Length: 337
Image: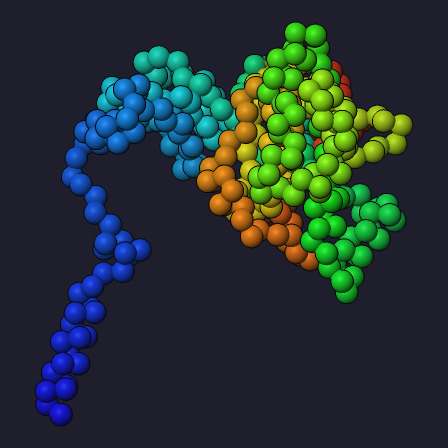
């Protein structure tokens, strides 16, 4: 009994000394400067070019002068600071005046409706660089006053037989996502980015399902036509578009998604849409996950949407269809005292 108890004590000590690989105690952080860390990364990345960094600033009410010092220090250490971004526009606006050399300022917002709203309120200015969640191209606030919308929501939530494929088949780009070509040269360049190999490529997307979302013609010229995608229908076809705002305000626009909350159909539809319209989304689609692995097994449910928007759907503004880029929107009245 004495020997067995001693063995148990030894095992306990051993397991106590063994660290969980996910624990903070197991994390080893070498004591070196940022400059030395960047130098260490170069042979790992096998790239002689400076390490590119995009700084995503979380609002901590830090002075622009302090952030400018951080940017200059990173540059002196050998990094290439591609830009600084934040959901709080005032934190990055005109930060270049405090830096040794100009830096790109990137405005992060939640939805396409936020882009429209920001343009009219002055939060987004001419020639700004803007990123918003691409899931808002597939979802917008439903009109709860319309009986058809209300019935659709109730049927989706309460129907005894839930079919995830019906949800994915129902993906339609919103009317404000419609695009148009400005010149023949532009159409030709876009055709090169979206040839017939993008349909039926055998990736994680079910080809038969995707062909229901686009016109069956897979010729190169047809794929360069923005009419290939299925769009939401609106009364009298009256709806302003993201492209109209981009051109009126001379914006650079990029998209991102929540990779843990998007299924393979929504991801493939968004990728093909962005690749077909580089003249609108010139900053492309930012993807933070490993393609084909991050979205594997993610499927829509009764109370969970997998369009990539996640909880940002409750933060963003809706798109006002009848509002145009040139419309004057009076500023909100200050509360009376």
